Image (cartoon, rainbow, N blue to C red; front, side, top):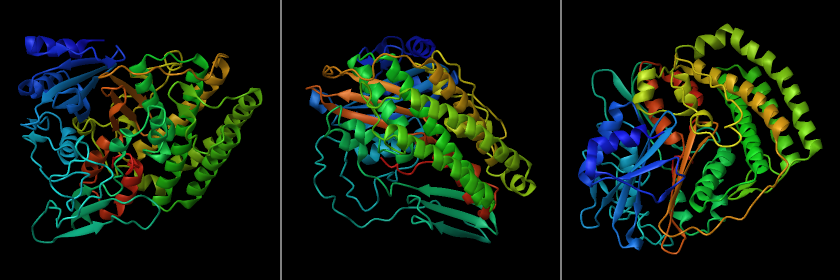
Length: 523
């Protein structure tokens, strides 16, 4: 499909030109002048395209300046718009007035690359903390990642709500549990939440900068550690981007096994989330039962594939583990057992009045809000958006195995939980189909050497939602840039919006129903 590309070409005329350096060919790319960057976004917004990601790259190794990219999607089509930014005038037009999702993408670009989004209403740092030097831009080529960052005095400017009876509640960044750090600042009147603002970045590890120091094969291990509970989907998205860049064609068996790992990761995490949601409404029976099922699946992963979370099983060029007939039988029997155990628990969840009283109408993200924020994954599907890369942008075996996408419209904590309920059922069906049809040929092939100044793109539906990777080769074929967009990068915005009108004690439940990644966000 080239609808989005055609719209931009018709609107911008000679100001837009096609970019043939991006692979695969199914993803379109256009280069537009800086002054027309926002015009392209406006055209796409009128056609109901979503902003999937916005990022920048330092292209000075090629004798150019900087570049800003925006990736848009509508149904099956992805379109990447690029604009060039000169070193001497490091500014670009903000897309925030067209797309709310650009709000934090652009703050992150400014913080880590030092490019100013003209028109963005918020100049506070994002990811980069306020006690870092203002002129330290880690993603520039002139920044030495081995240098210790100097600390300077700084204070974050929180948004304030004022009036009689309004008070603030700071939560975090250290939490009473094992979750990663994030700060939540509430303004409330009594128990009613007036406003919530998040401050993240506490687990920023310089992931995107670190990619530049690895070989293409070594970097797969880093991709698998961007967000530990999503190691399969991140490894797969990175690997597919590299394979697109190098023109690598995989054996079918490797493709099927990758999908098997992806669906097992989806089931395990959804089971854990359902248990955690129940725990946040004090229904500990289902918390223990769902986690019991998750634990048994993880042990099977370890027994058959050598790792509970399937880390480092997917690499550019294929997979490093196989499954034999006994393994197929073990998973087949496990799925039958899982259904017998799972369905009665779902019935208990569905028929428990006290649980229903807490999850229904809690943390409502309306469909129009979800679309405005360009939400993805569980959050989007619970709020009426039928988005799933396995259907919209399929790769083998999803181009041969149908996927039924559960979509609800209530947008509350119950809807986000029930999407998980249905996706577990669907993943069980998909795994059975994978095991019935898995081809017999090959596990891995060598990847070629990337040509200089080329890029590769991939979209994978992880268990939280759409994961995007964009990789760019340098002058010698090395990694010049690796952009990672975890689903959390857009869905954290939805959590802030859905909490309005709820009471403070419902925040842990709403937060868990989203269950976004701190690590996947804090790149």
